[in-house]
Amino acid sequence: MRKKRVFSGIQPSGTLHIGNYLGAIRQWLVEQKYKEGYFCIVDMHAITVPQDPEILRRRVRELAAVYLASGLDPRYSTIFVQSHVPAHAEACWILNCVTPVGWLERMTQYKSKAQQGASVSAGLLDYPVLQAADILLYDTDEVPVGEDQKQHVELSRDIAQRFNRLYGETFVLPEAVIPTSGSRIRAFNEPSRKMSKSEAQIRGHAVNLIDEPDEIRLTIQQAVTDSGREILFSDDPHRAGINNLLEVYELFTGLDRQAIEVHFAGKGYGVLKKELIEVVVEALRPIRERYYKLLANPAEIDQILRAGAEKARAVAEPKLFQMKKRVGFLIT
Ligand code: AQP
Image (cartoon, rainbow, N blue to C red):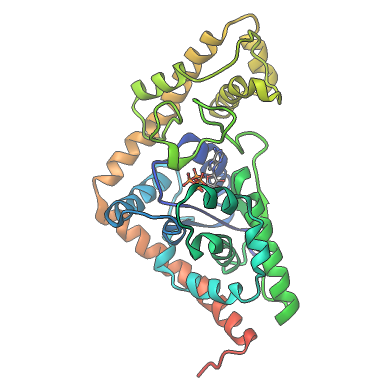
């Protein structure tokens, strides 16, 4: 029986925060030995909004270092850069031609980003079709992502179904795998919103994966909570700040919710913040240390990315060939 195929990716569009780790990367590590994982650095997605070329190039390597430092092991998982596998762009074009524009205009991420930007690129509208190409080229079964990506993965399924109906069975229908806890880590300075890479440099917004202990301390100490006293998990939007701190505590300690509530019974928010700081500092220390060691040797990172792209191409190209045949391209 073939191993379960897993595909996921992150844009090299900023510094990674604990939301990216808890919502996505942490899940990638689950059973990586027993699954066939493809983990992509989606630089083509990153340029759907303006990027500084030199900074983008640097961030691609940094993101590769984060993947590796977090525990992705190239012996089991394929780590590669999206633009190194041209099949993604070609497949995207073919899928564009079976995707109604109305499907794309309904995407909430597009709508909110289009409102923010002065000029909206065609690439931004097309973002989810490129994502569908990423996923479908690998006959992906599972797509481990945070909650904000659920709609895009569902669209990938819709596009796959439409292509299969028009041209015959070609694609596996992927499933989004969204963690029950940690799927939407909130901004520490504004708990009504999600923690976001593009805002991670705003003071107090996020704990970044490579933050120094002092930065982690400051961000958590200043985290916005409410005027209540009880330390309990809750869906109440007015208590989103405290719930967010508890979720981060839960995920980094691995304790169950009831044990956490018992532990903090009768204690104040200050105690929770103090303990959370210790937990997060210790959890991120080994990742930060490995990250800087890896970055000191960029040639080794590049070699891992080259080998990853070769492995990815070996899977993506035959699939693209099949797509081309199905739609009627002449193969000479
Ligand atoms: N706050 C979050 N909580 C849980 N998971 C999250 N993800 C992102 N934010 C959270 C998940 O991380 C993966 C990478 O997504 P991304 O590259 O789109 O990251 P981002 O932080 O959302 O980046 P940007 O550039 O700042 O995008 P916008 O502006 O759209 O927020 C995905 O699996 C995502 O679900």
